[in-house]
Amino acid sequence: MRLNHLGLPVRDPQRSIQFYHHYFGFDLATAQRYPDGTVIIRDADGFDLALHPVEAVGASPPFLHFGFRMPRPEAVRALLDQMGADGVEIIERYEEPAYAAFKCLDPDRHRVEIYWEPPPTAAG
Image (cartoon, rainbow, N blue to C red):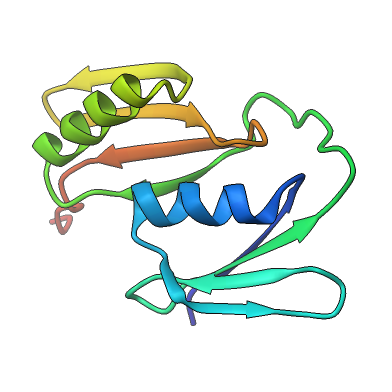
């Protein structure tokens, strides 16, 4: 069993669809629209992102976030550079020998972490 679905409140589903498509590869062709306005899009691994329209998105606790694991630290740095150049708000940055990461805000100010760390080693 694994987690493969996340629902987010959004003010403008189309804007959020474009954000998650552009930066994280969610497939526009998979968009399913529901009568309540929710749109679900999927990535190449079959992860479902449900974007539910609301009038306003309230503030969340500072620790609340979700993340995307990248295959290499260079990929994290490249996406950081691209998002920064595009004006996406970057709120945290980390660079350590075994961890490269940053957090940004999506169009509705949800905290998104992009990170790389080596796979855990077997103990013993």
